[in-house]
Image (cartoon, rainbow, N blue to C red; front, side):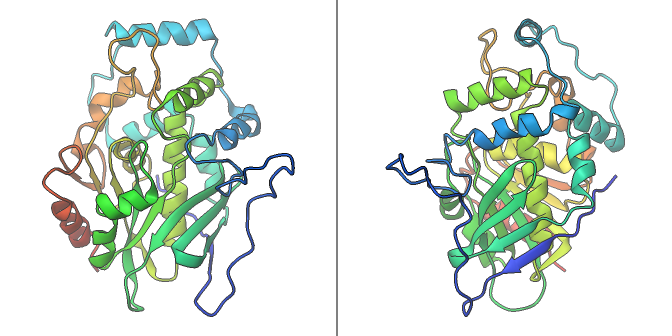
Length: 326
């Protein structure tokens, strides 16, 4: 099932004044101004939009007790949690992942809405969404006026959008004639902040990795609505944690044409430490993980890279450019 969405896009050109700041004014008692549109001092500690989501999504939350979550995590650590044994069809896998990540209500609400993407100075992007707040990113457009394919890129843990552009292939994708929207992940340093947030969301009946997947889908629809982008030619590019999210996104939404990533996940626990949590942990997604390693369980063409792109980004760029060509 595809989730179609028409988005309104506001593009601010060279002759148009820069937009007014979107972030709320800082607290006058705080001498340090907020550094992002969500009102957070930094992207790495920006948990407020996700904490606000818990209240907004209370109607479809599936909370668990701390004891139940501990038991689920211990089962994964002991390797006695059953995984899905019978090969699912892409449709069955999609339904299972959507249910496991509790994304059904979000995707149903996403379809008829028209969020606004504002593109400002230097390609800075803000996408407004009622569930996850103001999603930021950087947009690179190739020269010319013809419709082009688009790529949503998701950085790895602890990396910025600028680093993904400079080091992980973002610039090369734009040079290859593609529009590239690199999202700015929040609470994505892979540290105790993101781990604590992941636990809070799991207890509330959601998951941080599920919400990151939703953010990718919102960004993809925003990119597809840009006047320079052909919405039928959208791909994904992810490094590390961004690749983990990408493997979910291309199986939750079958509108993606191609995906390049360099890491998979079991969505379990880090290492062998009982009760450990990362921002990718989801006991409900864990049973499906063997089938996310199968490239044939998605309509998107997948190009798997070695971690960190040690041979360079050229092969992945060439793959996406070819798949997203007219």
